[in-house]
Image 1: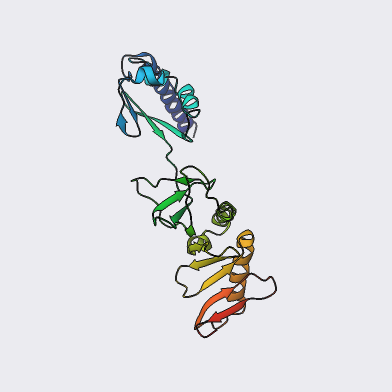
Image 2 (image 1 turned 60 degrees about the horizontal axis):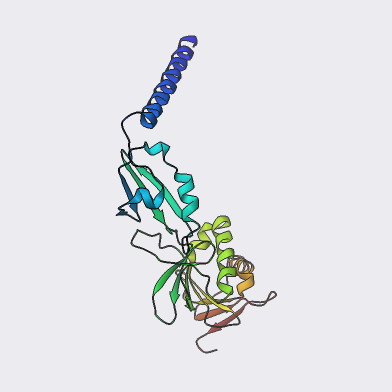
Length: 241
């Protein structure tokens, strides 16, 4: 047992010494000297003058924190991601957001993303996780701004809480239609009917829906709509109603 402890000690010591030596070599040696800078995946010319980075200096010695702070002061830049590509490149990526939801612009039919603050973002060309709710019957507005319909932000905040607390139910939320100013029409994946839900009470109304179908097991054949806007009742409507 003591022999094993000694071996572990010397292995950890050797790993620490090797790591320190490698870091020192990268920082102060001739390797890993900056020669190339890309901005949004495109090589940038004259980058030393525009971005304050120093040609020939080690990647680890470059003032990347100062660069990120400086870029965030530029108009229409809301996020900056910096990374290394060894041995000689720094990559600058701006405004790369992971959408929290999708928005289908009513006038144009174009699909956009919404970030965590409900700001409109471009989807880009990267692979996306498509299991996100789609907001429809909404005017998108300007990029990196919240849509004029204030309900969009209210609903998105609740959906993010739903994702944290009940991911399975969150993944069922397929479409949220904002076409009616008084309520939302929510479509759940695999269900033939829609739900009328209050924007400010989306979580509560969804909870009542789940309780209604699991506790009472109602026969919903022929139902096209469940109205959940009333705290003490659920109204079912069919094709003939």
